[in-house]
Amino acid sequence: MSLADCRIITLPKISDPRGNLTFIEGSNHIPFEIRRVYYLYDVPGGAERGGHAHKDLHQLIVAMSGSFDVVLDDGFQKKRFHLNRSYYGLYVCPMIWRELDNFSSGSVCMALASNLYDEDDYYRDYDLFIKALKSEK
Ligand code: TYD
Image 1: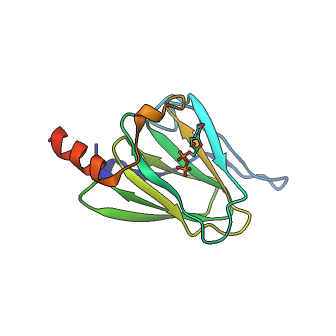
Image 2: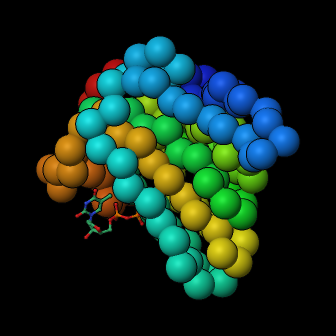
């Protein structure tokens, strides 16, 4: 899998004058079953999150409120995505280095994940991530 597999998924949106509604069904709207949800909030101005890759984890990242950028890197190229709508999700496949920055004030970043938290699934060192990519080829 590579950067080409990562993409913005437009989620279902039920528009209603009383307020809009979006829903996400695992394996139906996104290419994995959801086993975990986590969110980032109260992010101070100028902060950066991420800075790691996952060996096997699939994720969908959604700006539930406000906006932020996600920079994805598959070791060959980088791509910056701006997320600012709660009906857009960024699908991130395994073995992609990600950095999150440019958080607007009050923004909330929700991540849906294909597995439970497991520190052994992380590459937190960029050089080790690149070495692992090369050994995969
Ligand atoms: P990390 O994944 O490094 O955060 P981010 O990529 O958003 O900057 O996680 C930060 C800390 O939180 C780290 O100590 C692990 C812990 N954590 C959990 O315990 N469970 C989780 O589901 C997540 C995502 C993180």
